Length: 267
Length: 155
Image (cartoon, rainbow over all chains, first blue to last red; front, top):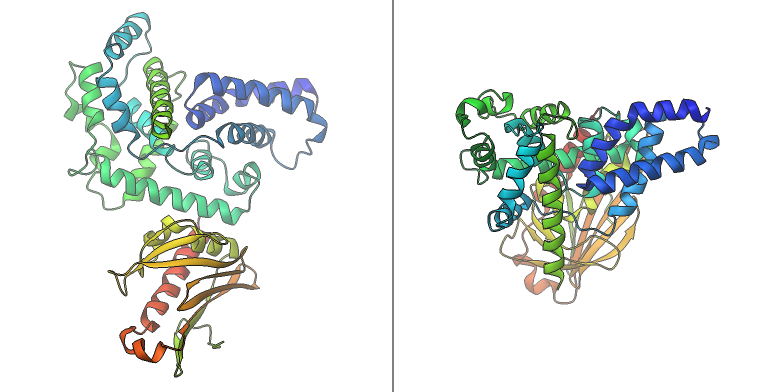
């Protein structure tokens, strides 16, 4: 493969790679750095590419390895990440003026319920062990097959299946206990709260009922509800969606809060 | 050590100073999946209906705290005595040990066996206070088989 062929392949994978890395790292800067490092590393190793997997799988393997190295020492986020970050946002006098400024200066600020569901899923998935989060995203959002994920993670297909199964079970259990959209006893109402802030003229109940999984809240098949969340996430590119500016702001806000949270709890 | 058929039925051998319960079952799954299930402490209660909680890390020399459905008020403080990757796991205390063994017996087919031996010089004094393990062992093996085979079927 020539460098030109590789560059072409890389560019066609770039958009997916960028959103994948953002969801793994919760940082625009880190995801851009990893993309840069991946391109350089892959370019230098082009002669080692044996076409046993697709170029896209190879690129994701290199990027995932760099991401894993960067994240290895970092703690995984708690399941209550959204509660912790909500409290911090509400007590930060600069938070809402900052958002108002963003909303005035950009058109990508239509932060509707689907955007929040995607943002929430990104944060909650960061409470999974890293390998499980990677498996889940690659399979459910970026359409990689089990065999390809086993190459990316350099593990067996059996372990990928284990990671997928346990991560899905954990996600179902977290949402069941927390999400008021699917469980009346759920403790998290951030969808409706944020909708009230960003779209005060909208009727939340009406908006909510346009979302397939909220309509199916009483469906006993919770796995199916999780799949519907993944479907929503798949349709939203965090860098290009109508609410991208706020999506990126919220993700990075939560990462900053989490770093402060861990720092405070270590001291 | 007690030898049992791989049919998921538990067998108990009682002696004056010890008691040994064993179960064995064939599981249509790769050893690595079963090993992952047996060594992920926090995940145990999700798939194993005989375990209420395991606190700690299941690794060589590690200490864990286990609560079982059979005696929910009691917390067992155990040490991981052996940890041979995807092959053998032993945990226990001064009273006895539980040994988990995995053997590949065919393509994607693994034999799982679990044996627990308890005993000692004072065993006859409290033997009657220890409930039989047979039912819990059979359920453990059944749960493990079901979970591992479900994971194996993931596409």
